[in-house]
Image (cartoon, rainbow, N blue to C red; front, side, top):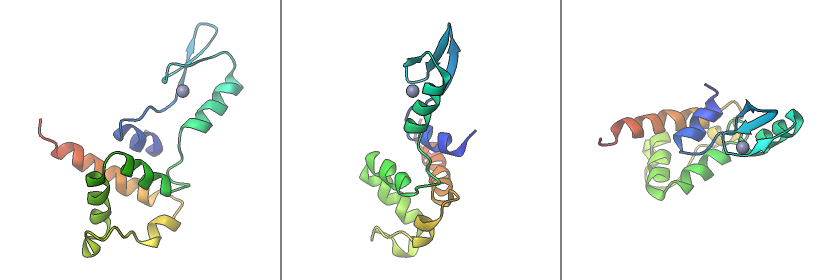
Length: 115
Ligand SMILES: [Zn+2]
């Protein structure tokens, strides 16, 4: 699975993907498109590239709650726990290091949830 998509879905967000439907395409968000060129624009506009802009990872984590966000930051730099710092290494990287760290963190969070 695409890692941007995996992170997005771990947050409970809708990843836009078009599937043939009748004479057009139905997106997973429920919108219907007649032409393929429009659907490509729709997906580019709504499916974030968390690797290209690691700040998006932090914004989406923060939206999910301050506890989750703080715990994630603490997991990246345990020696700086509770100060809300993040190493520039993660922010300057555009290969997905912060996104991948967030996926690993979210998987662990999901596994640790009581059933
Ligand atoms: Zn959509």
